Length: 336
Image (cartoon, rainbow, N blue to C red):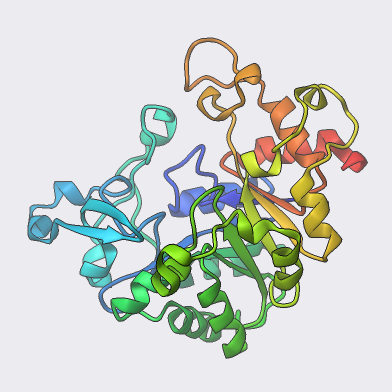
């Protein structure tokens, strides 16, 4: 069965990573919750999509933090704003969450300013109190960048999991776009499933830091030989939907039969699980033939797209709207 993983909680309905987003995702039937992990100045792992937080918090409305606005280069990207690693946890607690895509999701944006930022241990407590087994799929962000800045992400994560009783828990999955931190966690005996995230293009930041222009590309790391090598150390890979559906004939979107995905077939062939991101129902995120009406924020033919993705037989899919992904999985039933 394809797992439905709530992408930063029920982020289609509430500001991502807010407590209400996580709790709503549980109500809507998520099998697992996916948070992004970044550190504070005092080494607390907080739940934010990125360490630059101007788009997901009200930090710009706090004059006491105006002096912390700065410019940094993170994994090759020049960014201006406020960064979690420049704040103590006590300082971040004074901020409130905001919808990252307010033009697309005004109903979610109506909840701006209502909730504080959470730590990883806050989410673990929510999952422990869920009343049913719910998985954690924790994404470690920018591990090599933070390592150079003095924040060993593997150590920080292992410590929190150990203190919360999650070390080695069957509910635990850790993912990252960098292999180094996954290998570090395996060496530490953190346990759980390790999943290597792959962008469609480019190279992993830790590989670039070590090899420069000779770093292997993500595409090269999807070769048969690379996948076979990964199977000896990782549970699976996680790819974007375009990579998952590459080469799929548009007519397959109409057919209720299984959809053949080359990456699913090749990865499964060597024993790797396959996950994909991210199901979203708005026209902006759908293939052109499935868009309906002229508004980018309007829902298109999401059901056809969602069910086609599930019919590839992948092991798990990330979704902003947990309930819609659960409905699509139910519609496919035993055909995936």
